[in-house]
Amino acid sequence: MKQTFFQQLRSHFKHGLSAELAEPQRWVGSFLFALTILFLFAFALGDLEEKMKVQVLTAEFFLCSFFVLQITHLRIFAAEEEDKAVDIIQSYPTVMSTYYIAKVLLAILFSALIIFPFLGLMILLHGFPALTGKFALIAALSVVSLSALGVLLSWMTQKAFGRELLFPLLYFPLAVPVLLSAVQASFCLWGLAPEAMFLKWLSLLSGLCVIYFTLGFLLFDEITGWE
Image (cartoon, rainbow, N blue to C red; front, side, top):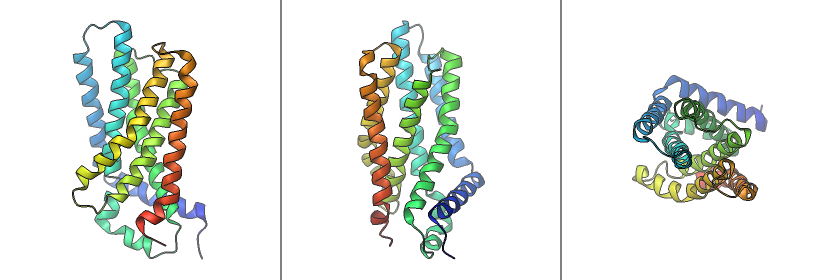
């Protein structure tokens, strides 16, 4: 009996979640990297004026999120590469866009488990003024945008020669608009940029989220070459 779209999505998600939990080093390493960045900035900041401190902490948060997401995305298909699960999936009648959505959801889940505790530690250690619903929305849209983009590019470069170099060459330029719009929208919240620009930067960030996710959803079948 052929599964429905949502049944296929749930099946892919459960399999991916089991694979990630079976080998936690894939995401524990990312968390340790985030902690290293956090404590490095804690010792390096010193005595800064409040305005400069907020600017530096905003840059720290989004840059750390960016690199953590890059590590997570680069390894998102590692389980399938090791146990040849893709060949099994390909042998079944499945809508491959469900596979893409499941991987994006997993990337969002494990990224959030790293990034939001990291944000909480920033608030405790530095007094980062991020306890607002608007900043949480900015952070969430950034994670979703970069996850949708990263999963797509990770699969595109999965079998490429020198993928560790090719992936960031594709990922970094396309991630820049997401980071810029997230940082500028945050500056509007902190009073470091005109408040009237907040909705414009947030709209740009939301648009990038929709564009990257839609492109991944529509193009995943074509990129993989699966019918």
